Image (spheres, rainbow, N blue to C red):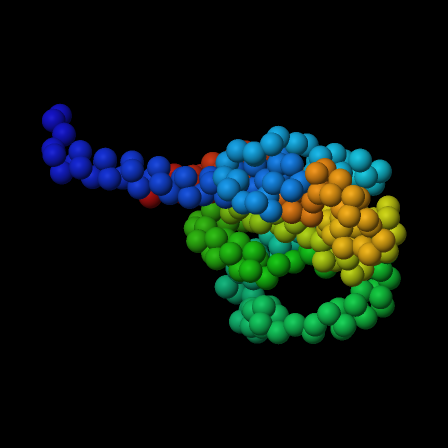
Amino acid sequence: MKTSKGRKLFMTFNYIFMIFFMASILYPFLNVLAISFSQGQDPAFGQIHIMPRVFSTEAYKTIFENAQIFRAFRNSVSRTIIGTITGLSFTAGLAYILSKKNLVGRRYYIFIFVLTMYLSGGMIPNFILMTNLGLIDNFLVYIIPQLLNVWNMMVMRAYFEEIPDSLTEAAEINGANGFQIFTRIILPVSKPVLATVALFIAVSQWNSWYDTYVYTSFNNLLTLQGLLIKILMESQADILANDLSAMDIEQRMQQATPETIKMATIIISTLPIVMVYPYLQKHFVKGIMVGAVKG
């Protein structure tokens, strides 16, 4: 079939637009990567785009020479895996319960949960609560407070409500109980929303540093994000210290600066999530509900 001129013009414009759109997304990441591999003083002069002026790995050496880096990485991986599994399970279970239209007091429960999205006790009440629960300097402080995100729960509830009632009714006729329906019927046909929410929870757990900063003081509980921020703050403090001579400052600027360390921390902290994303991407654009119920 012959392609019309209008179609060719549209496809040409579409390709050009997508190329510029991809470049606008890719350029900031390449710029951060280039600065992270730059010599300490180079970013101060500017004009670094996607390639470092003088290649250097001093920023990464500064980070990986820290003796706590591997323990912190293990803590971050542990909290991400455990937090994602427990958070997804808790969120999916609650969302399924609230998706049942015959639940007594359903609107009241939904109103209470939505209200928590707009109102918060603040830092001090939260700290008192964590203290009373015995979660200070406890690994569970990374897990229990993150069991439920109301926004994720509302997204899953809306998805569960779209599942045809004929699926659950057929399972009930065959003698399945509520737990069997949820695990064998609902969850298998909800892989897209489960994968999406799982990625949301994993990213939140991986990027979280504030709870480490506020609720923990032991080095064995330090996460990767908390350690990277600590290294960055220490590098800034060293540069600004009064007891450093001009020669020491110049030597330090040649090696690694807070700017290069900052960019290196961004690369190190985002790379694992970037590597995981392609495995879940297919569930964002493809559902498996199609054809589940015959008309």
